[in-house]
Length: 175
Image (cartoon, rainbow, N blue to C red; front, top):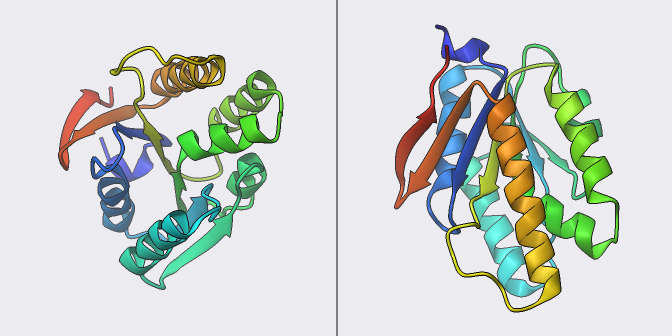
């Protein structure tokens, strides 16, 4: 199977596991024009530095769309010849929670859009379900939303990777 023709690929991993770098390499290997949909917001100096580091790592040959909430609109703006890197679902969920949006509704709209994306897309998301149960209701709600969207994305994706210490493990192969 031509991996360039896969419509949805999911890259999961813990924080600082190397998932973004791995996903960027998938995008580069496609040879298509690259569109980066960024969900991060620079709320503090540490996050601003992380965003700047990611931008420097990618270089200048990407179309960058800042979309902390409206990722579906950013996906639909892509051309059929492009390939999208959506980085990341975890920060998108955080943004939705902080803005008190209906996460179930937004998630359903996203999954509907991903069922027929305009071009191939690689999605990055944190796996947060391998730790202890948080001690507060907001964190537990986040854990529930993150686990739910990851499961739904993995079911939809044709290929799923889990990154540990920069090493990819294929969880789901194209059929």
